[in-house]
Amino acid sequence: MSNAPSTAAEPLAWLRQRSRWSVFEIVFWLATLLPFYFFPTYLNLASQVAIAALFAVSVDLVLGYAGIVTLGHAMFFGLGAYTAALISQAGWSEPLTGLVLSAAFVGLVGYVVSFLIVRVQHLALIMVTLGLGLLTYELANAMTWLTGGTDGLRLPRTWPVLGYFKFDLWGFTSYGYALAILLAGFLISRRIVNSAFGLALRGVRENVRRMPAIGSEHRAHLRKIYAISAALAGVAGAILTHTTSTVALDVLSFERSADVVVMLILGGTGRLYGAILGAIIFLVAQDQLAGINPQYWYFWIGLLLMVVVLFLPNGILGGLERLVRGRHD
Amino acid sequence: MISNIAIVLFDGLAFGMLLFVLSVGLSVTLGLMNFINLAHGAFGMLGGYVTVWLMRQLGFPFLLTLPAAFLAAALLGVLLERTLFRRLYGAGELNQVLFTIGLVFVAAAVATYFFGTAQQPIVLPRWLRGSTEVFGLLLGNYRMFLVAISLAITGLLFFTLERTRFGARIRAAVDNQRVAQGLGMDVERIFAITFAIGSGLAGLGGALAIEIVGLDPSFGFHFLVYVLIVVSVGGLGSIAGSFAGAALLGIGDVAGKYFMPEAGSFLIYLLLVAILLVRPLGLFGKR
Image (cartoon, rainbow over all chains, first blue to last red; front, top):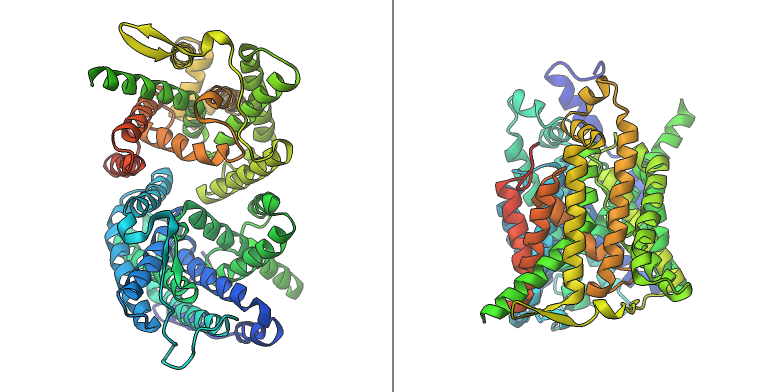
């Protein structure tokens, strides 16, 4: 606690320092443009990665920063996907307004659910998130007339983005669209975690009891971040609907909730870039390994997960950071 | 109609007893060390495959494979506990959850490697097949066997926990680990033994489950949800709670699927969330 800021001006300076852009970050975002030129045949995979990355960032906000362990976040991803699908089915296939409406609806649902979430902790919290996720899946499964059940829904092609960029078979527009929204979602998240509000969230994560003792409205903070995270996850789901023009029940599945947490852990929690890195590693490895032998894909993921938990408590990105910093010292 | 309800209740009870055997070990180990072991279902899967393998390859009779399933799962359990799990006792719940989920993934892949993804049916001895009329109701023999064996195990567990010295030690360690340690009890050893017994019971449950729900590499995952519901609804470290939770879930599940096939699982999850929101520590939870 010796280096903790003590006067009112110091935390602001600390936050300002955190929110400064480093060279690494700029290089990273420039590198996300590489697939357009070097891997044009993998653009559809790249847009899947961007969608998963946005989803993982949304989970990082609640899990990495606020410490809410969730095994049911696919609930919001799927709700976003279905909201976008139903809007499109009703005859309005404009992507950006679809995104905004999905985000608004899912954010609202997230806010309502957050009142339940803040009531419980530990195992009960994990079970409530898991139960709500499964509940939503079963509900969608039962409401075949609305969701198309296990067959899913086929939708009319999404209208061009901004009235200009048509969705093509190669995925140029898909990736560009997904990447642009990922960047937007990332910037919002980055702004949030580097604000006083973000600092309060970290406080809740580190010590739930101390925050109310120093007068912080910790439950209100948790509710707010949970709703924001739900909206972001909904946006990720909506992008999936827009880029594939289909939606099926698997957007709500437990596997999706589990996979996104795995991605986040692999990359490293509580650092936003960990979520993106984890999504890249997970999906590229899945694409490559599943091509060789799909049945044993989960063997490697399981092993990787165990190794990361035992030896890299801060994920791959945390390990890299330690390596770099160790050399500097 | 009345007899239908009675049979659904009985089948549900039998299924619930199966869930009890599968999950009681997790409830006790969770209460003891706060270690969230999501791989508990994988020990059940191991027990199932041990039974299948012994019956097919070595021609063991079904009843003899049950102790073997128990022993195999108990041995693997204590081995993993001593080498890997104990490193995670101090870690956060997220790390425990992820590590053990990773273990489930690996276990499923290993099972696929040795046995393939197909269902593994077994042939029961003649006296366990078919059904018998009891008080005018046609009850499955195997389900009666299941209820009998589970009640015997419950009785044994209660007796051990309430009447023996070792049981008193477990209760003390669950109630307050620090004080128990301060009084000179070897809590680590108590936990290793408890973990072995719990894993062994999961293995036994897995072997018993083959006839009811089948066995394939997804067993560990599929049953994880059921096991977790039993544990969290029943309350950690409470055998009576697990028993009540398992009976409730078993009857609810079978009745839901029988009377409302479209909404059956939905109601189960709704009940789970509702119970946990009203009583976050479970129906019988103390802490």
